[in-house]
Image (cartoon, rainbow, N blue to C red; front, side):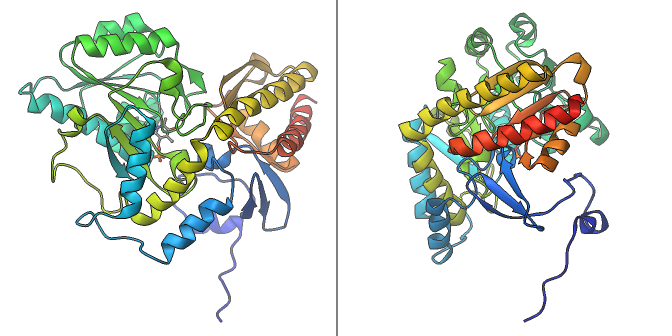
Length: 404
Ligand SMILES: *Cc1c(COP(=O)(O)O)cnc(C)c1O
């Protein structure tokens, strides 16, 4: 057999379009919440592939579902439906407000579908000027041109002008400002219940409630982007139930496939009618391989044991992080829900989040940032207590180094 091509971290710089700056080691294997690099060094994974690997690495039930489906049927195209996609649709519908599901391959695509649905719905009602979308500063909705324009971080969109029009941004958690721009020309409001990439900033319940009322008053579609908060991350299947505010459209991805690419847009019967035959689609969306995996993931996450376990793990993290912060006061706030936790750095350590995660890597733990001033943790929802303890001990050593 031919030898595999030798690859190192340098190969990335040699061969890859440089949109990422990955860590200076290459991970080759994972099991549960541990991963190992090419040199055999172990890391505790507190990032979970950016809130994706909700059941850790190589979960036996999920792997079995993938392998079984891989031997049966991978792909058909949407001229033919399949059993796994229909089963997954039924699981999602039974567990949420939704009556209908559209499947795609990523979070951005799910949001793209949601925004297109809202525009077309208004047009179908004969209201061609009802095309305005309201979104929020600091939001993140994906990297397609439409979703990156809906996102509220101009640094991600400004280089790609001309951008799709008709999108207005107002400050997150400022209901009065939102009320000023939501009117009868508004077709959609898109919001994350907890802004993830933007810094792990939870919405105030009154803010989401107020957006619901404004959308009702002006017949606008309320879209909850639960791509990051979704599928158990906050200790509920979806965060909207915690807030007691039901959206018209919910988008989900990340944890849904636990690492296998899949996204979905959930909505009501009435809104689903907007996207009739031929109006939208994607080649791979809802393919049997992805949906078989997601079906297995869903069955495990949507159980009281896992969801209650997330709340318990939240406390383990909080206790551990507070203890670190007592010894080395570098966090001004620790916030978030469930296993979506953000640690805001104090003024003295502003801008050092990346450096802290690099030191954490050296100590053998993987953490994320959410902007330059926030260290973020989004581990597996079933991470064992021992791994939490060991990972936090390693993280504490990284913090000690930045403080010295
Ligand atoms: C990650 C993320 C997206 C984009 O998902 P992709 O799968 O990268 O396209 C959209 N919205 C939120 C809230 C996210 O966290």
